Image 1: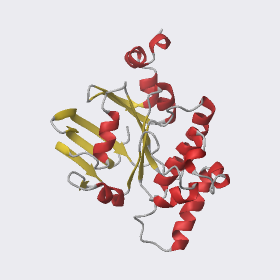
Image 2: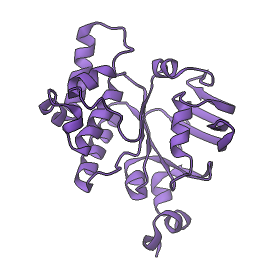
Image 3: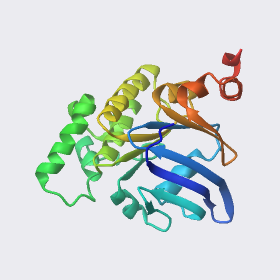
Image 4: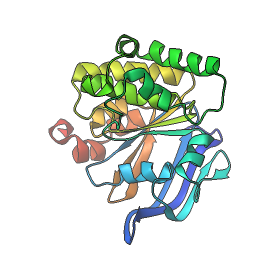
Length: 244
């Protein structure tokens, strides 16, 4: 892994829902300029970790240090203002609103001139040309892949330093997944750090440079993605017959 100063460092993180604890002492490091993947089965705690990072649920103990600043206790709006944007599972678009208005909702917290917001919007359209074609169309009438593009674009509109995407490929065709991967890799080359939750382990490890495997609310393995892709234990646990 990189030896640079971490963009985000979690130490001994515990979090959950009310009296039900889900995350048990997580340690994790994200470095700037990388795509990092979280892999694991349903119920492993991946989405819960993203909710804790975005302030939707509180950390009960441990540290979440973002560029030297402790995130615990911050509201979701405060965490967004720090440069962490969360694209939730299920996209959560305003289905009756058109695509462009959905994208502009992502910039609600930016107190900047219209020209700056317009440039940000153009960057989204450059990354996802299909959204420009659909910009006057109700978001809920688009395909699943186009809605995922819109959800990611809405996250981009907040000008994040870290974009967190929960279940990137859920319900999408392989062709659309490949298109999304190419767009995210291009954004990453332009400097955007990305944390992606993905149940398709091969997709996750081929997309990312670093990955962490989660099980039962704990990190059980971390390292370079290509190393994990060829690790017999990872292949046996998550790739089934492909481990042979």
